[in-house]
Length: 117
Image 1 (cartoon, rainbow, N blue to C red):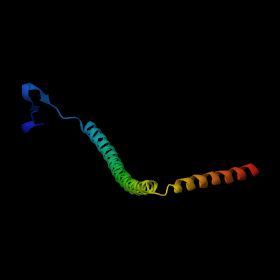
Image 2: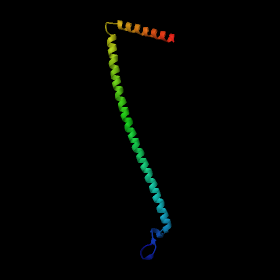
Image 3: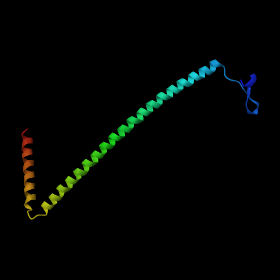
Image 4: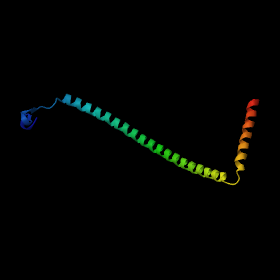
């Protein structure tokens, strides 16, 4: 109602009549339930996004550690290969012959051991 007991008028001549109190209370209760449901969903999404952020940080740390390990291994392997190449360029080419004889000897021993079983 409006001033002096007359119904409120909207623009264009439409009259406003408020909802009955039992319908308004029902709608208010439904809005409260929906608000609480939305609050729970927001809380769930927030905790899920925090968990995702923690997992991303953990995976990023793991990948950085792996990258560091690969760089160290690559440096070690490069250093080893350079030493082998330096050794092969030396005057003592007998090292390769000794290595070949050693490998053949090991294979021969393995063959005998496997054959006896």
